Length: 210
Length: 211
Image (cartoon, rainbow over all chains, first blue to last red; front, side, top):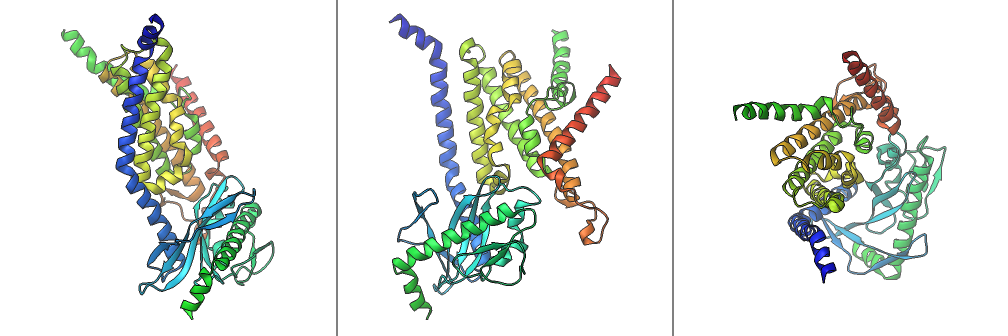
């Protein structure tokens, strides 16, 4: 009994403070989380909107798309259908991530309605070296993806960056970051394309588009 | 009575000014080196980090000062950490809600304020031994001192790395026909170490002359 009394005497402030602080965080989180979630949606829509200029609305796909990650685990990917003002499908977008030079690189990738060409990518988050690896955010590198075939891409060290094909010219001094983006985009695009073809989603779009 | 009335404003101003120069947390006490080196590539993130630290410092000093008589010696560090972690989490949520881009720029360095030595040092050295007013003044002084140092360091680095200060172009860039060649290294960690080292050396020279 005396031990319990001693325990309460020593720790009552800690217990009370834990409840009080927990409540304070919970109230703040409840008040701010809708705004935080909205910020994430706005950012994503803004980035994809720049890649698919005709898109006005983004609808999450009902069908679950699962891809196999590099480690052999199954990963669920949320695919968004980009719709024009008239409700027509103008493309698809999804988040893709993988290891970069310094840290994880998170991208949002957009492809056309038929899933034949890549509309581009934007960097959601990365921690690549300033002045070198962070040039993956720059137009020089990103513009090479606009119109590239939605399939396997290859990184080359020498080539014409203005020529749009499956060859992506690496950024000088940032080969690892350049290669990381090529691998992430290639991997996610091919995997998601395969899954969507299997589930007949792209076929439906082709019929709609035609 | 009249003596104590005269002494209080002097004590308050002394406490406030201590954080700015005599006990400046970064330049004199060498505390909070992690954010000092990590978020000073540009002025905007440095200023935001400084404001977050001021908020956490003031709030934690208030709480610690209010419960100083209830604190048991062996749980006091635990209580400080709990208090600091709470206000850092709140600051992080506020930043994510109202400054989402800045929150992404600062990345993990906002949650890392929890382990910022300045805050736990002020809780232990000041708030746990003094009244509410003096604790708040101490927090403001230390916080502003930290923020100003970060802003000066960030201004130098941003200017040399991009030719701009607070994202306003100051020096004409060579690529646009001007004379200034951007010094990319200043935007990288090496730039932070060099600039901070030079600033600390300068402070040592200045203080060395005075003594």
